[in-house]
Length: 503
Image 1 (cartoon, one colour):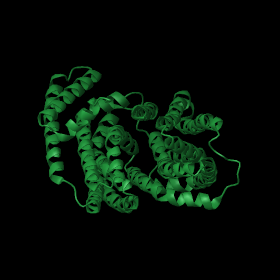
Image 2 (cartoon, helix red, strand yellow):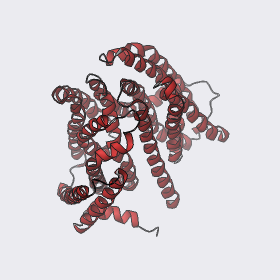
Image 3 (tube, helix red, strand yellow):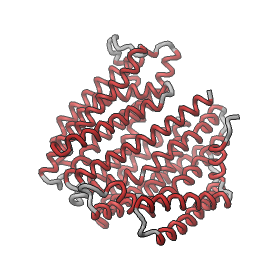
Image 4 (cartoon, one colour):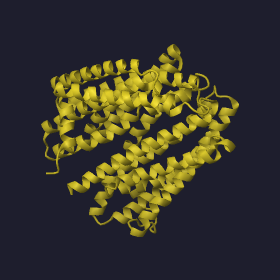
């Protein structure tokens, strides 16, 4: 059983890494064809609102359907229950899709009044195409949650990769003919292909009864569970939309710089967060099951220190290499050296956002484990007002560079508020342990940074990719060595989990 779970975890981590890489490739394709032009701005701005609904449905469905479906299976009602949620979601998603398509011509000029007429037209039609995807996304989200309930996590990730690859393929084939519309139409085709892929796996097994009439009271009961979780996800996307709206006032290219920098800098958070969850959060579940509050708090403390251990050197290393990385990934085709410089500057200001939100992921897991997710929702809603205020102040001061700074400062306040509430709930954490380990990690990162800066001075004439590899190896070795010498608890804990034998 443990062997199967370990294999499933490795497949999930591998599939997640592949998903993030494919997302990076999609951004590279957009940069190649459209650079930092108004076309790229319009496409990326148009994607924000539909993507908010997509994540609202996908992530909310996984958190709400998995436990309720497992419960229905235990009551021998799994097929009927899954069918009811599937059909009910199809109807609701279709209604959302139609509403979104109808309001897009009004919404885009309202949100981005500084866009040119051509950019507004592109943004409007791209938004309409994305809203057309929502019906298929609704059905996809139910089936992805079903796969998760059966511990087939990698299938959900693979289906998302299909969507991204379809967008990339459409851009390669049609970008020169129809511009940004190719990406949107490719995304629509991808959602359909992804649904076909899932149905091909699900229908022969007859695990879903779709012949019965929709039982709306039962569907309504499910969505009362779904809404709080989905809204928490939506709040995060609203904060992203706030930044994009403010970027729309900063001239051509600002939306593009914000998007590319954010996606690149936040990649370690997305990748390492999965790994840490695999190692840390079984401890939380066992502690809650055993009603062991001390063990639960130790699990949170290990999560916070381990997250800091892997994120801080990764993000600092990225910051030291940021011009090299953006040149490697984006600087080709229509993406100029000036765009690389602007994107690099934006990326530096996202540093706090990555670190604080990553640490907050651990705290949020604690809230969810204790079934206190409504508290996160309340704090998240308050973060929207704070985000608007910071964007207004910092964008007025620094232009589009103020937008990532606003995200970082807001993340600090948001994480601080969540930590204060969580500490009160659990009766305190061992801050002496946390402070000491954080200090050791910070010292190891400082030593790593010194070594990296020294090496960079010696290899300025080397090819870009060789510089990146050399710096990465040097930084990794120095950080690991210093963390080991300082006997950093998080490093030794992670090392034991990586090298632990099956026995």
